[in-house]
Length: 110
Length: 115
Image (cartoon, rainbow over all chains, first blue to last red; front, side):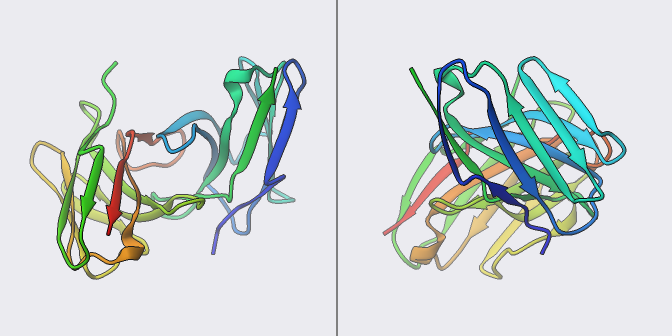
């Protein structure tokens, strides 16, 4: 299975702090993407990093990818209460299907 | 901008009934994907279509079937429903087969409850 595992499973921080989520996967990938999901709602695409990239930024988001360690991290800087959601990494390997990680539930408290 | 439209948003069915979920991709997108997300679980890939042909298949039960029509919308047909089929069903679309920098855009999902 190419399923990714995310760490931590749950994270609770104060508004203004940074949040870091980690994703590890098992097999080679084409790209790795991060999605956000508010409780019971749809998946919102956040950022995509290709296998030949090491770091990518988008607004308050920073994603790193280490293919030698088969791991990625998502950093959300200066978090806001509205960032409260579940965050999933998703790997695109062979074929065109996404394999999702187990998710991190982030809670940002005022 | 237009997004992926799924209907219905909520569906309640009895065991052994059938259900049809519909997905309308983003205009000009030719690839559609179906995912199933059980309570507290991560989304699991079911099946995908590219240019109206099945392109990949995941853990989709034999009781389920899907197709993509000439207007690129897709339908997921589920028969002999079981309690364990209760889940959030997502459709996603992309332009061309995902890979490289192609991104899958997800709809809001259909919540299926089997009683």
